[in-house]
Length: 550
Image (cartoon, rainbow, N blue to C red; front, top):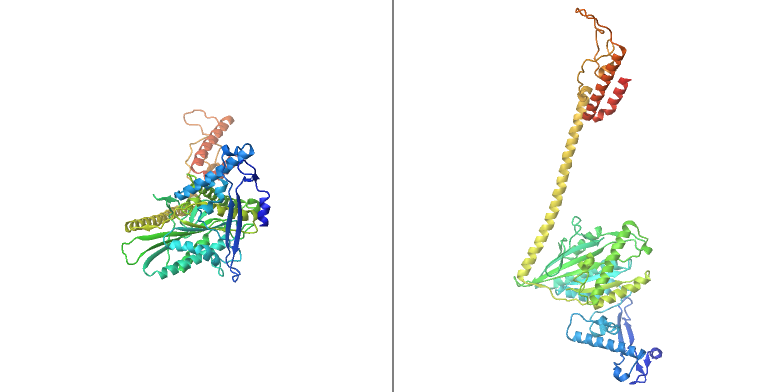
């Protein structure tokens, strides 16, 4: 009572023609109740609230004769009450979109008027089993009845998201607890037949990778005519908990994790482990088939560069993580505001979550908080709260016998396409290896040929030189150097006088120099031809030419 009286002292009231103490505002007095079992130290905490509201009365200006500030107050009161009336009418008519956000009053009253989302705060002393029993088990029950379901952990990096999903030996995570319940349910239903498959993917730097198949990377998102998202990820058939855990462990071996300043094993990607459940009556050969999926999502945590001091690859990863989480926040805001266009396609994460957010799936958000990040500890509950106004359109998924057959053909087609893609990669690798093998053979042949020429001697590897025409030179035999370049010795020079009686005189000095210049010109031309045919011998040929001319 003391708190109520204290608040009433500053509440807005004013005199009007119709009331001496007219309320000029709506008031909400909230009582919050938390309770837990006194005998369970680490048990869950139930939290609820009771709102006591005093709404300001509507006014007619013609009666109140209000002006100035009173007129403005009356207009705002009337507007908020009008929006409240519209919301109640929309709810009573079963409209898909409810205009809660048209006024502050209806936003605060959204849960009281028609919201069916529930909240539960669980302390850090609680185990994953406590979380499972309190909020997860009802969702898994719906999944086994044929409803699609999605559970994802959201929060700052190092806040415990991965531990919530995967757990450890002493505190099993939701992953194992879900699997235990699923196969216990299958064992109990003796009058039904079940087929259970699982897939595991990650979104790393806006690229979707198959964690159950290393060769299946960079998956493309497709959609069927109903808007359902399709991925060519490997789906492993499982028939017990151990096989489910085996696939999960296999995927975790190649999932991207790295050390940062805030977490020694920080998740660098968002992951989605999907369990697909098909069931039909064992006594009906052509009866309908119930098919549903459960997504267990571990979202990478948002990061601040100022805290992580990330650089290089870590900085790029953090930027992509923050971008996808920002798009997720925008999508939820658009859904809660009833926007016609929802920007699912702005990131791979929101495209994969399109059914979980506003589509055919029941969803559960687990907001993980940590005292090490004060601001994010505030923003995470705000994010979770904003999702409560998102309305999904859930239904049991039933396939007729014809649809089941078609579904089987589609699954077979996807499987064959995947196998064909793998085979094409193998053939490409084999062709590449074959080309490398042939090149290696040619290289070895060349080496053998070179070695053979060396064994046969220099004459086998050096092109034969043609004999030159006779030119003027010095008397007698030439030196070995000039002989190697083609100089021919001039024997019996100068010529003797012939019988004709014609007088022959010795060659003049300038005539000899001209002949030598002509010989050098011929040698230079031959050098150019030789270089063109055998450029590798350029050094030796140049040295030989230089020595011969000197």
